[in-house]
Amino acid sequence: MPAKAFTIFYFLISSMSFAGQSSWTSLFTTPSGDKYENFLALKKSEVEGVDFQTVKEYVGSSVTIIAPHAGRIELGTSEITRAVARNSLNLYLFEGIKKSGNFELHITSDHFDEPQALALMRVSTLGISIHGFKDDNASSIAIGGANKIVAERLAVVLQKLGFDVEFPSRRFKGENLENIVNRAITNGVQLEISSKLRAELLNDSAKMNAFAKGIRSAIGAT
Image 1 (cartoon, helix red, strand yellow):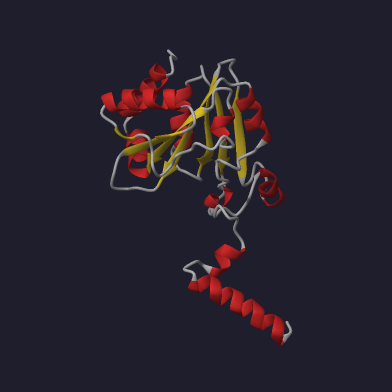
Image 2: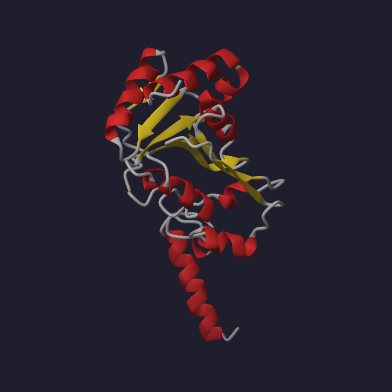
């Protein structure tokens, strides 16, 4: 590399580090912080069946339960999504299955455009998305999404069941209409579940059943 070009490159790296960002991370990630901007970009580098897999189950319901960061990306979201869908609501999972580095497969919900997910949401009246965030101290749920009526109904039901609910969520608003859950006809509700609560749900079948039943009752599913 010529000396002048190296100087410019070094200045760029130094400036980014000074701004409080990881130099290499900010060079090779998107503005959202993800490695891949969308599904097309991901598919150019990752192998289906080796690095990721998709699960789509259309059962003729007007409601789709979707986990776009499932499998090993946000642990526990696959299991929670299946518990809520329970073979009578449509289900979609985008699962990381790599041995390590699965968070590289995370595509922010506003940019998530895997074709099967888009097709399923277009024929759904309502979407409910299941996500996870890191908090090993609080068993909490943050509720967002563009369908405020259903979001509030879910918040009330889950609070009555004893769950710690943040609604409307200030951290995870999920209001962008490009968000995959809001691609449904009447938009959707985004549920962000703390890592502590996800672990509790996976290890306590009664609690998982109560959680899933509460969501289903709030949206009128039996």
